[in-house]
Length: 336
Length: 301
Image (cartoon, rainbow over all chains, first blue to last red; front, top):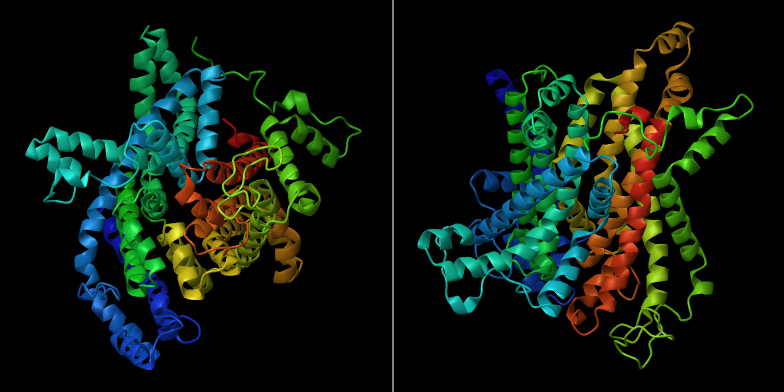
């Protein structure tokens, strides 16, 4: 296991180098004159020279990459062209907001996905199964940005149940300490704030969680179906165990490994979907940060935002692999 | 009642239903099974409908897609079935023309990733060694990004626009086809008939073309159809972020992004382009699922 862990970590190195090459290209390999693209058509020669100098565009190409990686290794993610604040500082509150949203979406996806999958499998070919699978099929066919807009229109603007954007009502004057508002408000014991934070969280989390929910539901359904056909389930039934125990205890435990893997892999979808969801709900996360940077041609922010999210994704994938190998000893450590 | 593990009448393919008769050609047998398979049939009907809409867009639509009128943000009516947008353009017309853009982008992006992905996967799987190492690492790197983020990165480098969005969608789908091809080659490579072909002195290129590629068509068709669905969503997402098609092109994602300001005032500007995306994507997902069941009955639940 230890050898496998170390090998998996070493295998990250070429991937991380490749990722840095891709993000490096965002600023340094723009076709034509990068400085002109970044500054816009109307930039004066002084502005262009300044940008060239600040981003190191006046250096030879290999040196630019070397400097870029050197900066990254020292935790320097560059400076925003708009706010002139170091990105490594600026990005922190955004990261917490994205983490909170993604975790909430994942919780929704796993809870509803697993239960929907179990119910569908248990009552295979009933109307329940069919409607469950139609929901799952629709879930993988709806673009997250349209779902978000529909929710916003229906539940925020038409029905007025939920706030349509943001993380918290600014009038509450709440200042979190960790950036995770749910935890912060819970620990400070302020339930008005907690309620407000939860209400803000629900719509974006549901939008973001729907696709993973649908995928988890389909996965759960097929693995539960497989387990339901096995001998030990027949034995459990023969022993007269109630259906509830058969399905929820015996089946779920055995079906959970593939489901967990899928759930882990869906985190990538969540981090990507966060860009779209946060844009719609004005959720102040990394996705929104990147989106605003696109509009303002703040290339260093686009570059570092993408690199940070992709790095998180890679680390999550690594953890999923390791947990998977740990749970299921049948995994061959020799294979890549 | 708990369901027992049994074949039931609702599941779409059972061996008895579709057993080919002696006089039937394999193609006819496949078509018959295909048509009986509900999700494949519904999916293909939806797709054909959208292809027809796209092809005959100028005949079907009552207006030009960029034709403005004085009816700004008018609600759906007899003269504007889906209402109008903030410039008085007919949304029905724009949605129909949008089918052209989305289907084209999906087609060319997926065709591109199939060609490039298969080529790389073929080389990696067949020749192995350092070629395999390099190509597999490239796939790993591409897969290390959440796909839409990689697409954003590519468009940020190349510049926004429909063509660059199409390239981005193609690139992010390359590893899926590449890995599929590679694993296919690896599993076929050791078969006796390949050994026999090699013993007979057949050239590598001929082995690849005659014996390995034909084993690849059915999974590629399944993956390609499902990939088409995600490609449509990804292209629309880029449009929504302002990185894909540029106004006044009637691209569904771009239309959704334009509608954001008017959701409350004119929800139809948002509802119809979105429905169009959902229907198209649903069609390809249904067809892809159906094809997978037909080609590989073992995959079926």
